[in-house]
Length: 207
Image (cartoon, rainbow, N blue to C red):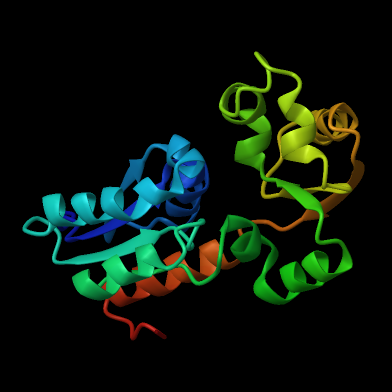
């Protein structure tokens, strides 16, 4: 009989597909996953309270938890909550950094600070989260306000679907940005979840 999972990963909804895929291909049964809405990224001040509420709602059922978020624009508020709750998260400022890897992302950022990044998730939901979420579809004049300082679009691809690169090229053209493609796989998201899974299966956790 499989033992009941006693650990929980609280994940950003923008990572739901990737976390589920990693869990499936690695056969991880030591933890369950619950996701928060990806729309929180448009209101980062709401991320830390939402994560804390999720931790506290599940504390009795899951003695150990891990948070699959980076700082994600919370300005340290998420880390303050996690210190209070005794829970760890993925290192990094945002998902672009942990997908690309900290060193590779630092090079990208230094090469061109005015870079707009796409992930597989953001590409799939570009219309809903960017064009509609930021109000650009209804108010095209906002395009310059949001993207006027960008020079380049970099597609950080985890496991792109057929036609994804062409679609990303189209987004870059639509935003009038130079296009670059980088295949990252799951990056440090995979490493962090592997560490957590090993701990739950009785192997020493590195952090």
